[in-house]
Amino acid sequence: MPSKKIIKPKVFISYAWGNEEYQHKVLSFATKLMGDGIEVVLDKWDLKEGMDTFSFMEESVNNPKITNVLLLLDPVYAKKADNRDGGVGTETQIISTEVYRKVKQEKFIPVIFERNKRGNVCKPKYLVSRLHFDLSIAESFDSEYMRLVKTLYGVDSYVKPEIGNEPVWVEKPLITGLKNNVSYDFLKTHQPIQKKKESFMNYLNSIFNRIADFVQYNETEITADNYIDKYDSTEAIRNDYLLLLNQSVYIVGCYTEIADFFEKTENAICGNRTEAKNIIAIRIHEMFIYTIAFYLKSKDFKNVGNLLGETYFNNNGKINACCSYVFLHCDLYRNKLDQKINKLTKKDNPCGTATHWIDTLAMDFCSKEQFIFADLICFNYSIYGKDFIGEIKWLPLLYTYDEYNNGLLPIGTKLKSKEYVLNILPMFNYSNVKEFIEKFESVAKEQNYIKDTYRFSASFTESPILGDFIDANDIATLR
Image (cartoon, rainbow, N blue to C red; front, side, top):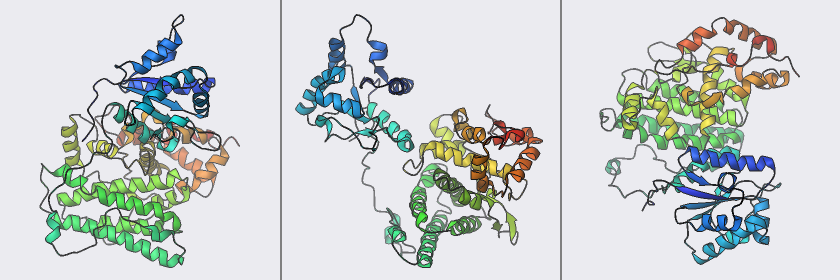
């Protein structure tokens, strides 16, 4: 059963006073919670001069209006708690009694806020066996923070589903191996490179077959009422692809097979449009962004450039027509999903599809920021990429979620460094800095037109490009 929803959560934060930087980090965290509708009791703003500190702590911990107590753990907190030292020691005397007495208690929540110099988690002895949230790892902060906030609102992150009915395909002949919770561990083993590459291609082909099956069995089964459900039913295909992509690190040069997979899949759904094909086109678009995010998060700029610079062939209607990765963009097919998502969320979002992608993000694969950044790089390659084919550029559907230009700003400002420019040149397929600067200069002449063209008419913001953050004359001017 799901937890009981808490309408107005109120929490007390217990932490150890560290240096000024650490205190600022705690204050920022508390402010973030307040911004998400959670009232926070914190000594910084609730304990005034003249007040009794022990009474303040005791009341904050025992106050029935406090729905949760967050214990922000770091090496200093663990040491002070075990030694019963200072304010943390006082709070520990109050809290530990409750924790030991109520084995099933959920009020006191350990949160790993910082690790020690070796990267280890430090917990007081009385909390060693207690499950915790971990906000100490930057890459997983967003997903872990969301889980914590859900918990504070009394909402379970993982709800046990109800048992459904027997699937209709149980009685049908087996056409392809239906793979759920797949394992691609074979790719990790010490096998000949060619053998592993063949297995990788077979796995991709299996995913392609599942896509083909979806189109075949749902060609006339998609209605206005089940449109979102049908789209969501392809999420398992996406997740299995991402599992496989994670294992691709064990195969050198497999970007070619990945590019061939996208080309083959997109060609299979071109022509004679059906709603099933439109749904798959949206999913393929999303999977391509995840693929770029996969290489970006490991700073594998060469393979980003390989995939974005690849020539894709459109064999449907035009024999061997060369085109860019924009061939994979779902802009012509997302209108119905946009409308359905906006109706469901009761919001007039510029792009309902992008909203749904964010809401159903595979957070164990990449963060929201990494996913958005990948979409922006796809857009910027279509502007600055050396090998980009065609006039139509990549419209980044996720750009309205790029708060404060967090995606491109760090790259744009670092382009002053020649060392940094040399590092990312492979992402845009340039062999030298001079060519890169010349491209910037030519783009500057049409920059305003590009930004005005590739945006949502319903949005006040424009999609950012690298030229927003640096002039061509400033590129590679520093070491």
